[in-house]
Length: 375
Length: 255
Image (cartoon, rainbow over all chains, first blue to last red):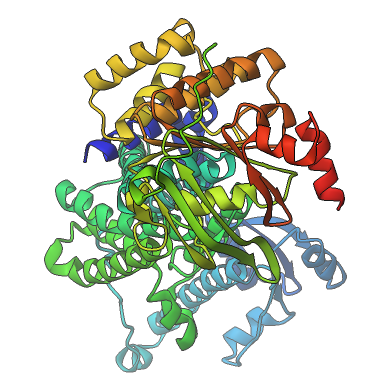
């Protein structure tokens, strides 16, 4: 135990003495949190649109007003002819173009079924899908209002037409602020970087400069070396998580409803997996460059398959199976449930069980691969 | 400078008298045979030198004896422990200084000493006493609070030696300990080695400096993984009828 203490003390001393390291550990995360907290948002507003109204009737103007007087869209251009539309879409000036044909208003009055054209820039499928959703909502409201006007004029219609009025309430994040959703994700990514990347780098660095060999000729056990290399970064990880969470609460006003001791406990099981992976990576590579590259590959895969950006529900079955081995997936889920819903262990135990299984397995695997003697 | 007398050759070479025994030791890396069927014994308190060009197999041999590398075949014992089974126990009996300076550059001199002392399980008080004791010959306390990276190479080497012998190992492995050091520092370093051996420490040292070979009680010349000559420096010189180990070495290698 005393030997582990010496290793931990030495490691922390080295980190604290390296100004670059301190910047990487404390300043960079703050900037990331700040920038990403604002930049990564799925709240899409003020999308540029183009409207081409060939009808120019009272009714078509009503529709145009509905499209231009919403925070979702900004009327960028009011085109007079079809010709301009393509160039606007092509150059990415607008994401949606609405074309109202001639006689639109008249057809609506005479109970024909008029068509309007909605053209979308599918290059960014995410944005255009959201824009289409907004447009459909406007059309729906427009049709309902039109119909209600007709009902007012015809008592017969009033008896036979009924509307459904959906009453929606969004729980846990009533304003649907995506920053509430994103910050837990960013915190878990930062934690992964500290624990996985720094652990693997710290070991490989010692291998490169030869001090690891100097340790290997001492009677210290590989378990003690592993403990000495993981405990410091676990500590740094917890410090970093506290700093990031404080920042999230004070700056982004994220509510943390759940229990903090439970959070620390669950974070510890998550860190078990990432630290184990850091050791594992260090047994596969020889240089810091390789360690960096490999940790980065793991990190990107973890993020993409975590449900952070893309819902896991949308993934093909075989990819879903892969995500079961992704510790980040469970930790992001845990953070979100715990922060916003205040979920307890009675809800989060499946995630805990998965994290423990992954963490213990990878740690055993890493320890088995970490030899004091070369074969 | 006190040069200790070599151990009495008439002493019976029982196991107790031997710090290191090696029989038919080999190490292959794929097709390449780095160490090819070597056998030798090192007596307690002896300075045993491995002389050879770069790539002759000196470092590979040391790495097998210090438990850093698994031997491909052959037998060996270091400090009474088997190199196959008990290589972790060997580590309690040895000190090791690698050819590359491998202490923590970003730690202070004292921090390196206390760190390695702690890793060997010595108490703070014990380390303090040992450092004071070693300081008489190594003069390290004068630079105690300097960052290790700022030290001249000669100091670094003495610090590496201090870290390797803090725990008073009975057997000391030095892999090209004086590489890149100026002649005066080298001379000083070898005086320290001789003193250690005089106090009963067995010293296993590799070098490619021919003049250093003269400090060894016994010398084995290694070439392409094999030991091609082994005896005391004076006996080797007599056998080849030459005053210079360098000439003999070149003659042997050219053969």
